[in-house]
Length: 170
Picture 1: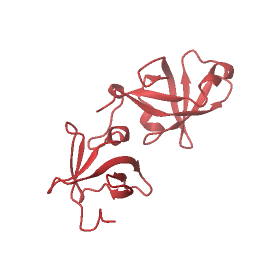
Picture 2: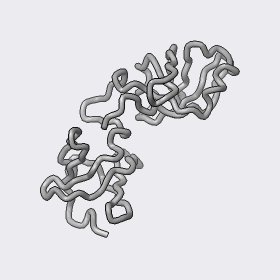
Picture 3: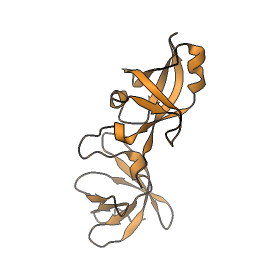
Picture 4: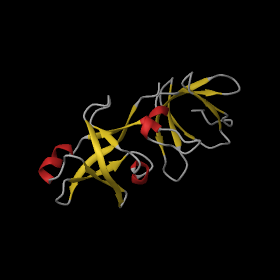
């Protein structure tokens, strides 16, 4: 099920003397967040924060939020997760939010066999790896490349794959 509000990242520190904060982004990077007008303090859209400015610095997003004009005011956000509204975020064609993928069933497109559920998505070297929790226990890392992906069925909450022999063997 696609959630309306998604985790944008965690506030990890203050920045400067004007109430700015550093956000460790849990997305493709701080540039992705630049078009957002609001962030939220809860996964239900609670406590909206108007974004005055977002800029990138060394992989972090520096946020200037309305109503936070001093370090003392901004300090309350340190350690908090900020959320974004899916309707305000724009993804390039063919891209998906990782949070939507978590929990999806991975199924063989040809045989219908269910291999398990996506537990996490990692990106160690430019290619996503689906960490799949097996029904019989253990996990498998599956490369999310075009050759092995047959499609995503959002209605059935499934990722359809074309594995090669041995990919899901113990």
